[in-house]
Image (cartoon, rainbow, N blue to C red; front, side, top):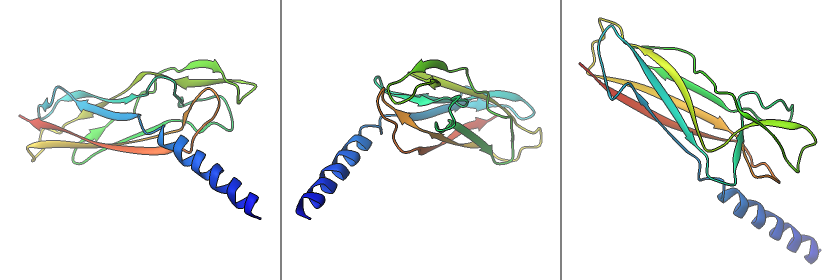
Length: 155
């Protein structure tokens, strides 16, 4: 009984310590150059930065068990286009017999914001949510979601 409890304590400790190591991904972004005009279309961008030694499954990982990256962007009072997903890189890992399409390093997810000509506010606010599953070459961690709010001044 004590051995079983000790094993569980060690296993959970390892899991939580390993999971703590996957928090290095950052999500940032921009709308235009921080300034937008009424009646204009501007480019927005979400940037996912993945530390060395880790990767995240792409939006199309090509494995039924891999959780895809999903980026959602919404704006209040503005129209936001769908996000464009970049192509990932096909890689082979110890935990899978098949190639998995992944993102590594810095990954950009562009979109377009259309500001109506009659926009009343002085600031455009866009919120983005990035859901991803980070992995090493040997193990995948539980999926995470990171949110970011982007703003741009309206002239």
